Each structure stands twice: as C-alpha cells, then as structure tokens.
Length: 231
Image (tube, rainbow, N blue to C red; front, side, top):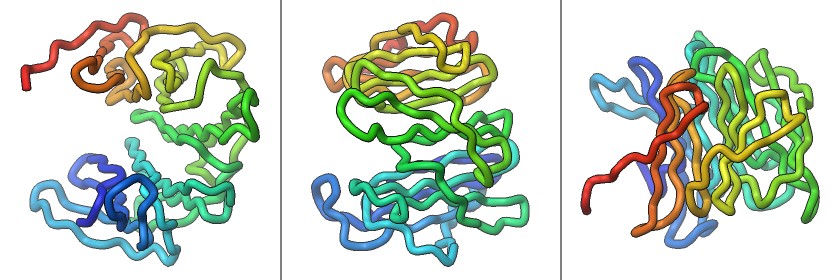
C-alpha cells in the first residue's frame, strides 16, 4: 500500500487504511496520504477517491463504529485548513466534515455514533479543549477544557467515561464530563488507550524491554497487566 501505514481498522466485512508517502524519519513525506478500503474475505485493497487532497504527513487515524467509518489526516503545522476529516456513510461515499479546531486526537465509541475531538493547546500550560459530535461530525459542541500533566498522547471513550493518555505515562479517566480526573494506570511513556467494546479495553505504553500492556474487562474500572510472549 505504501510507507508507512498510518492507521488500519476493520469494521465487519471491511477494512480501512490510511497510508502516507514518506521516506525514513518522522515527517519526511513527499506525497499526500491515501485512503484505502478492502474486503476482509478477499484481502483486496482499492484506493478511495474522496475529491479531497490529503496532507503530506504521517499523522492520522481511522475510526469505526457500528454505523460509520471516519478518517482523520493531520499535519505537523498549525494550519486548520490542512487537516482533513472524512466520514463514510452507509452509501459508501466519503464526505469531508469540518473540524472544530486544530485537532490533536480524535476518538469514537464502537457501539454508538459519538465522536470526540481534542484540540491542540494554544501554548505551554494551556488546557486541552475537547469537543463532541453526535451527528457524524456535522456539528460540534465543546464539553470540557482541562490542563493535563503532560502532552496528550491518546484518547478513548466508552459508555461511562473518557480515558486520556498523557505522554508521561499516566492514563486518566473522567466520569463527569471533565469536571474531575483521576489516574487509573501508569503505563510507560507515550501510552495508547483503546476500547474494542464498551467493556473491553487495552492500554499499551513504554518501550522495549519495558513495554507495558494492560487490559480491562469491566469498562475501565480495573486493569490487569498482560504477560507478553518472549521475543
């Protein structure tokens, strides 16, 4: 497909990939990103024509839920017009949606069509502002703004809470729409957090040989370390 594969997500019988055109090293990209679809049963990929030129970067995400798929192609600069957010409808067409701000991370719920978008802080020490959308990115409303103990590394949502991963290794949770946060796990630098269902989630952080993987089966109330197989 190209180098590197920025994001890859399955959804039922289909899979979606966001692929950059880059050389070695982060940000060394000379071609726009490409969006691809595949049928899982056949493994055959096809390039998607969206009518929108995606940025020349290796920043992005694919988001899926039970009704739709989304593609976010970000940049390293501070120009909102360079970021692209696309929504795939039930008719198979990809349509550009307007983002509420310069976005750092986006997240969606697997079981519901709820989107979150976290803005890039305007400066050091500024809080992270988070918007939500319940209509597929057609409209957005701010839900909270919160200072974090480091740079936002990742974000995930389920029915009961929002989980925020910070580059210092903390994974925080808010269960009251951003009014209060508490640390649920420490997972090592640049952690990622995701949920494959409302109850099942995973946190991965740190670098080899100190990589940490933790799983939850109760919606994030408790987390257990996973033993990784030997290399």
